[in-house]
Amino acid sequence: MENRLKKVYISYKHDENYNGAMEAIKRGLEKNGIYYSIDVQDIKYRDDIVAYEKEIGSADKVIMFITATYLKSIDCMFEMTEIFKNEDVKNRVFPVVDLQPIPRNRNGLKEIKDFWLKQKVNASVQMQTEFGCSDYVINELSKINAIIKALDEFWDYLVHINTGSFKDLLDNDAALLMEEIQRVTARKTAELDERIVSMGENQPTVIRQITQNGEKSVYVEKNIGTININ
Image 1 (cartoon, rainbow, N blue to C red):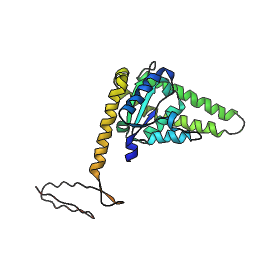
Image 2: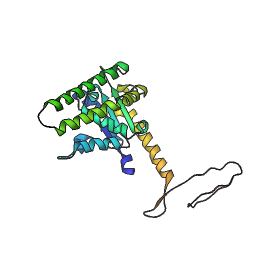
Image 3: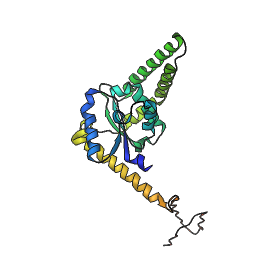
Image 4: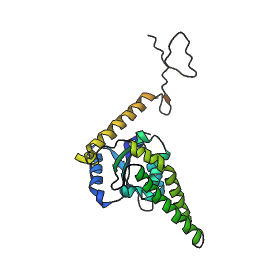
């Protein structure tokens, strides 16, 4: 858990139009001593790309750099499905959003749904018409189905969360973004410190806080500690 709290994963679409923004984020992370993982440096020769995408999905902190090209990338959107599959999106995800020219409303959702439904039809036709059965196409169709299934939840999150001004968020080496990442990390680390106390080298235990009101007795099974009576 501790190692995962220290590292921020970045889910994004390679796009030269956003090179400056990506560099600002990386500079901010490095300047603030925040460990981060990004595909260009962490996917090594002969590594499994899908395994890395799933690793992003299970991470405790993810910067989702969501652009119009991200929304139409099967790899990026598969990462999205993995992120949402692991839940607690509100606390784990730090969105950076610039959807132009796709509107961030019902019409935008329809555009993205129509795009992925068309991709599904194309993949299905290919499976039915080509000689033999392609495992690659089958796996891609499975990813597309997962994307379509997760779209409503993803778009609801995207529309209702305030991501602020794209420019302001990335100014001064993404200072505002770094502040929020550090604030959440500090809170999570404090929660761990409060819950876990070492009772020996290999035997951590969970602190249980019990509050008793009124005249009823308090019974604690298989636990030790101190009861303070005020």
